[in-house]
Amino acid sequence: MAVKLAVEGVGKDFLIPVLDRVSFTVEAGEFLCLLGPNGCGKTTLLRIIGGLEPATRGRVLLDGQPVVADRRHDRKVGVVFQEDRLLPWLSLRQNVALVLKPLGLSAREREAAATRHLRVAGLAGFEDYYPSRVSGGMRQRAAIARALSVEPDVLLMDEPFGALDAQNRRIMQNEVRRIWRETGRTILFVTHSIEEAVAIGTTLAMLSARPARIREMIKNDGRVERAKLIDDLNTLIMEEVERQQGGAK
Amino acid sequence: MSARRWAARLHVPTLAVAALVFAGWTLLSWRYGAYVLPSPWAVARGFVDILLSGEIWKHTGASLYRIAVGFGGAVGVAVLLGLAAFLSRVARDIVRDALAVLNATSVFVWIVISIIWFGLSNWAPIFTTFMITLPVVAANIVEGVENVDRRLLEMGDVYRLNGREKFVAIVIPSTLPYLVAGMKVGFGLALKVSVVAEIFGVTSGIGYIMNYSREILATQMVFVWALVMILVMMATDKLVFDAVSRRVARWR
Image (cartoon, rainbow over all chains, first blue to last red; front, top):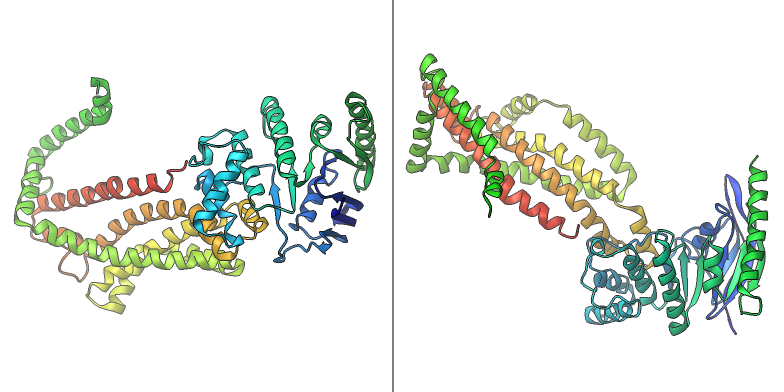
């Protein structure tokens, strides 16, 4: 399999070093979950990979091309944030169609593509609703549809279900898993929930305490029993949490 | 519709208080005479008179024309200032400080200055209205521009929307409610201020005719024109701004 994304010694300092030197690669079609103690820099790492923030050290290669923050580039990245970030004054369809404008499609093509991706995300029939008229889970589905509509090289998801209740969370995890199988996209998914990561990821990357490095990369291919995997990861994360708290003292 | 709904619609308690006020007003006008306090009935008759003679349209029209030019100009300039504030941090700080100064300036300052500059002409009340409403509308727009959700703009960056696309899709819709709110307050102010400026040097408009009525000792007509002003204010509020506000916020 081809390497889609290479993170090479990426680090970031805000007053103190947050990310030390993080290196890993993601293959095309992989579903990688980034885990780690709260505040260890998972979101920062995702933002650097998405080109939303510059790295202090190291570089990110997407299809062999370096990702540069704050510059126009041809690569297509879909991001699903912790909040839905839908424009409240546009219908769900208009929200998706908006991000297709830079791709040079006609208005009709944009509408059709938006409708199609909303259907994939399970929102058929709700295309003309304003975001305020649908539930939080549906808004996050629309945000996912929007991210998929640009046919991204890589889909970045930053704790996208953090604001949802347990039931909706479970439903959305299954949905993302299904969408990943159907579309074959490369996905990077940040979460602080080990259960969530084990349920949906094909690869699990555990970050260490601040300043973060990769502590462990684990293939979640079913060879290790899920319950044992969750147990092992819990032990790991508690070690790191203690280290981070110890370091803060 | 039930009796209770109708009662709520008509604000029955308010009507009751109004009836009491009218009764007291009538008594006081008997006591002090029509020069000091004309009776409600004299005011009502005066109102019908100007309605029938068409005088109401002449003066209301003249006032509304000046407000349209002065206030309209203020809205136009305020939008440009908001745009500048959006494009540059430095401009935003300058605009904000300048608006604070304008806000602190009295109506009377602008009336006197405009008479010196423009003489006794239409331009005196227009200029005064412009200078007084500009800071109110502009301050609202600048606040709207500052409150544009940065996270939405970042979303625009992720999907490579260009500056124009972000402006149209994100900045304008999020600033619009602030603009409408500013215009609502600004228009009320414009009506109140322009009539004051009309006392000096023009020969038409609600302010002029009120002052003239006072000079010819027709106190009831002062009340009549005050009533006209109140009606114009309430009508624009209900018919124009309420409808526009609803339209702007229909997605809520």
